Image (cartoon, rainbow, N blue to C red; front, side):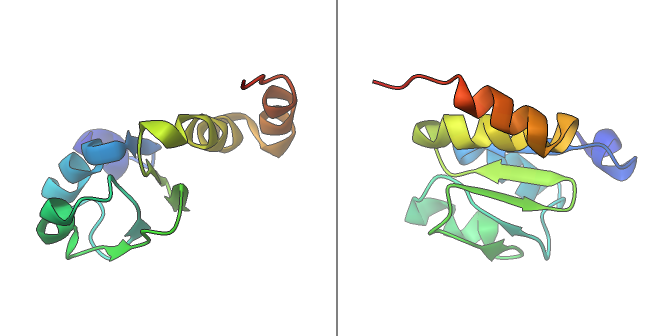
Length: 97
């Protein structure tokens, strides 16, 4: 993960997995989101936490709040890797009931 980040690659984490990025100091000074538990607050202190957001991208780091945010998180990944048009094409085909 550290190698990928240091070499300008995208790094993404959903839910509490963002704490791994925090432990590696990848998210220091960056905006982000993770599972909204107060027990994680201490691990997020070096970051600018955005608890109201489902997904946050800051540079090459993409974070999602929880498993319930998997769709917007996945669409953010598609957008980062393939562009807005590809993300919109995928989004238009998603059926949620």
